[in-house]
Amino acid sequence: MSIQEDMDRHLREAIKGRDRVRLDAIRLIKTEAAVAASEPDFTGDPHSDEFLETVISAFVKRMSKAKTEYESYGERGAEMAAKLGSEVDYLSTFLPKKADAADTELVVQEAISDLGVTDGKEVGRVIGHILKKRGDLDGALVNKLVRQALGA
Image (cartoon, rainbow, N blue to C red):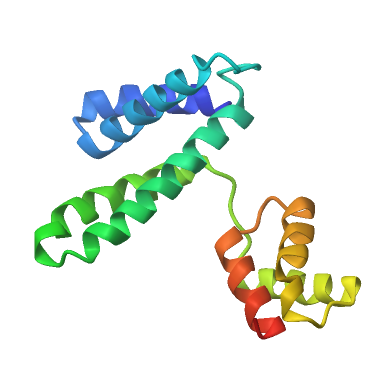
């Protein structure tokens, strides 16, 4: 089942079940996808899994940052942070699973030894090498682990 079909099914279920979190999250993604597809330089299929994964991933990343910001407000931002957290958790189910920290650590160590890098100034080179080869890794985690390994 494609992501589009899965989202449509979830949308129908959310409407019937009056699930505001799922309903709002799916509608937001549909709007984001429509806006991205209407850009003048857009080419491709707006219903393809690759396109929808890109839209969802970008949205999840933005909302995760916003959630962190709301959490820093303490009690005043707690309700909005919880809402964003629920949306992020739900929408993440449509994305491919990311490798865990242990797997990512192995990939980082392998890349560093393959490239023969010892200088902390080559962090970007190592990160770029890793992310080009593996799309199932969390970029922030890769960045953190490479920096730790190279002492940067």
